[in-house]
Image: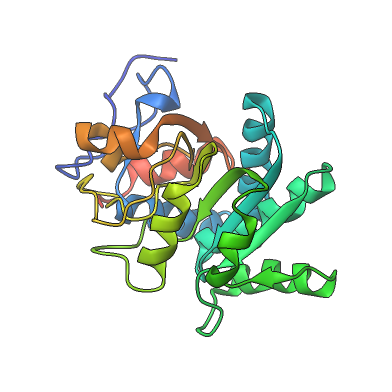
Length: 245
């Protein structure tokens, strides 16, 4: 790449370009930038959110398989887009022959549009979606679990029933995976809530998050894998060249 500006400085909001950045692994996006990236991809580049979600989920499963999956998989889903990633991941894992259980933190509230689509696909194909009270019955058979509860937009202490479910997931004796960011970890500050999911691996989308620059986040994130969502490089360029977030 040609020489140019340095990497983005998330704390100050200073913007940059991809010129001079050796790899996307040098980038750290904050909460507002992560949200803006999705907006640009959808509104300016015409990529439907459901397409971004599908690509993200499939690529997460690719990483999981490359690392290794043993035993049955538990996917814990929230109602937002992070949960939508989880519903889609569950489908892709099942398509590849894995036994998959989906636990919903709370099925009573409203879902994001794209999460609702992926949840409905599972329901229409006969999936049984479990509540948190079903988790103890799955403990002995689960060989891997996925946290798709809370995304980069979440702030502060997770509320019930999320906090209790996060605690239960942390108690499982199996490899733990987080989708984009471990639930309970603040995207910007790296502060861990009392109930924070502790992952062995985190598949984070597009670029690392600002939280991952902070030492206290290391235990929560485990090994970090940057996963693309199928959007062209131009989206990230537009983000970095736009107004500071």
